[in-house]
Amino acid sequence: MLPPTLPIILASISLTAAAAISFGTIVHYPPTNTSIGDLEAVFNPTTGTNGGYYSTSVVPDDGYGAYDYCNMPHARAREYVIPRGYNLQYVELIHRHHKRTPYASNTFPYEDIAMYCDDVETVYYGQPKNGVSVTNIWWKNYQDPSNPLTYYKNGFNGTCQFPQISYAGLDDSAQHGRDLWSVYGDKLKFLPKTFDPATMRIRATSNEITSQVGGALVRAMYPHLSEVNVWQQISAVDSLEPGYSCSFADNVRSTYQGTDEWYEHLDLAKGVFDQLDEISGVDPNDSGWHSWFDHYFDNLSSRLCHQLPLPCKISNSSDCVSEQLAEQVFRLGDYEYNYIFREAANSTLYSATHYGAFIAELMSRLKGKVAGKESTIYRHNIAHDGSIAPLLGALQINTLRWPGMGSEVIFELWRKEFSHDYSVRVLYGGKPLVTSTPLGTLDMVSYDDFIAYLESLVGNNGELVYQYCTSS
Ligand SMILES: *[C@@H]1O[C@H](CO)[C@@H](O)[C@H](O)[C@H]1NC(C)=O
Ligand SMILES: *[C@@H]1O[C@H](CO)[C@@H](O)[C@H](O)[C@H]1NC(C)=O
Ligand SMILES: *[C@@H]1O[C@H](CO)[C@@H](O)[C@H](O)[C@H]1NC(C)=O
Ligand SMILES: *[C@@H]1O[C@H](CO)[C@@H](O)[C@H](O)[C@H]1NC(C)=O
Ligand SMILES: *[C@@H]1O[C@H](CO)[C@@H](O)[C@H](O)[C@H]1NC(C)=O
Ligand SMILES: *[C@@H]1O[C@H](CO)[C@@H](O)[C@H](O)[C@H]1NC(C)=O
Image (cartoon, rainbow, N blue to C red; front, side, top):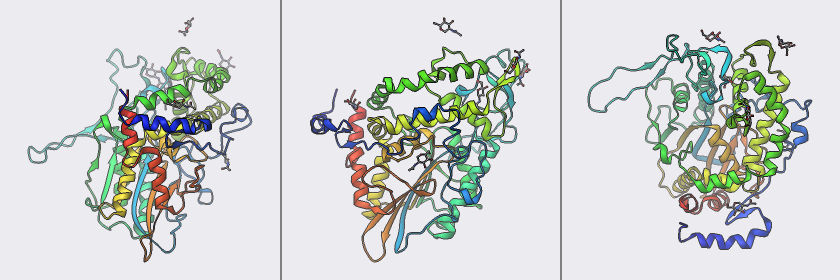
């Protein structure tokens, strides 16, 4: 059943249908950077990666800001620019968790190396507020050789849960926290010296890896803070992961991922899949591994980010994934993210509905701040690539590559001194976000223009998301 207000939206389609890039008020502005979507370059073995790093968390200071899949650049004092003549009012930050093991679904049937996580213990328990006191529970992951299924298709031998944030990923999380403090604590004196739960909020998704990152990151910002609430929405409607279902959005995406335009790169990649399947033992008929490069990308990149070797065939340790083959997979990964979240004409409609609930929340806080009704000054959201990509898609970033570990988007609300004029700056990787919308680079754009843009995506109060996502 369509909600009663939908006909109004449908009516406006016919006005804009000729452009073929609008749906109601949601307008798609194609990216002008076409290099990532250029199939000739994607399949040219001499292309290398699209630039940057895939095997280290450390980028030298003079190159900071470069793409680093293992540890994406974020705001820090060294590069951070303070806009003169403005006072900071509100910060909402969202980033992908830091580096981790692969997800279980991305491990090969038999991995040729083992992976150990004994250097990290995760903690999980429920403490009644006014009731029995409980013992802290530290999870110890292990495999028992007398479990007859232990080595049956479980991917890696060893002691990691898939996924879990690695020791090195926790280091990166702590560095991220120190860097944020260097900006919003030391440099701007915007954050209080003591964590203030009334004005600051840390939020995570129900996926425990986001809380693992939070522990290291918050402690680095507030070294004396031993406990903190991490806010988590009910999974079924969580806007951050996002966890809410929106079949309208899913249908939009599956339509443009069902076109010849989408299948073209998969057809061209047949030989790439063959080589990878042969080495990994992945069933060539397994659609999860072959409907896109997500699984192979995750598998290869998480090895490289942890200085582990690229995989070899179990039966022949000299038949391995080459660096060139890995780079081919990384180019294909960028290609797919760019297609799904930016190039496809309906990608903006998808992102605006699939991630619209978060955008509506963000918008309501910006409005609340300007109206003097919002008491928080800092909200910190720890999320996933599946959160950052549609957010960047909705903002229509001009160059989208797969948002790597720790990728960060910051929304800053500034007020001009001695006035009521507000401006918004959006930083991605620590730099003002370059979009292909009429807003251009989101560097101190007018608050009214920014809100008008968000309203075009989700409605004045998020009602478009409600309408689309509750229509069957
Ligand atoms: C386009 O994307 C490529 C690959 O990331 C990058 O090297 C290049 O600088 C981008 N061009 C512009 C104009 O942003
Ligand atoms: C990569 O795939 C192999 C083979 O399935 C698997 O054992 C391994 O766990 C995967 N690695 C990652 C990081 O996903
Ligand atoms: C994994 O454990 C099994 C059983 O002990 C062993 O046969 C196999 O060689 C191990 N693989 C690796 C990569 O350690
Ligand atoms: C994949 O499917 C094809 C056609 O259904 C079949 O002939 C082939 O044996 C399958 N391959 C594997 C490895 O299961
Ligand atoms: C093992 O792989 C290497 C490299 O692909 C190949 O040259 C060699 O013939 C293979 N050995 C066997 C026994 O298949
Ligand atoms: C975008 O999706 C809408 C809703 O499903 C559909 O009506 C429209 O035809 C699609 N537009 C394009 C360009 O595919």
